Image (cartoon, rainbow, N blue to C red; front, top):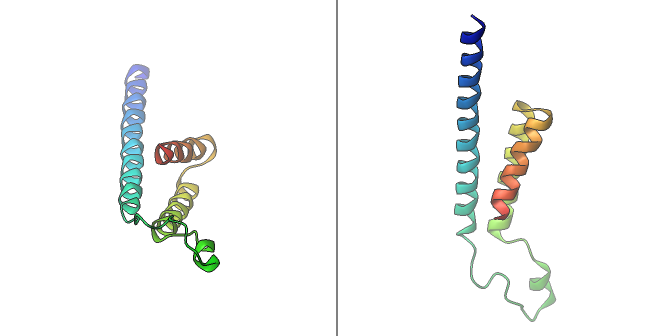
Length: 96
């Protein structure tokens, strides 16, 4: 019985790990999609100071809002080191 229980726990942990990795992959894919909306001239210096002060582009704003949503969902469903590891993986993958 102990062997069966241990085997089931290992199987569940493996499936949960796979599910979490798929979630991270989907999050990164959506963020990459949002970044495809970046325009070539978004960061080109402009002469007027008002245009130069506007550094938040549409992809930047959309990415930030999406990451806030992800953070809220992670806080609701994961805790402690699990939430920290998940968000770290999302951050490192997004940075890459």
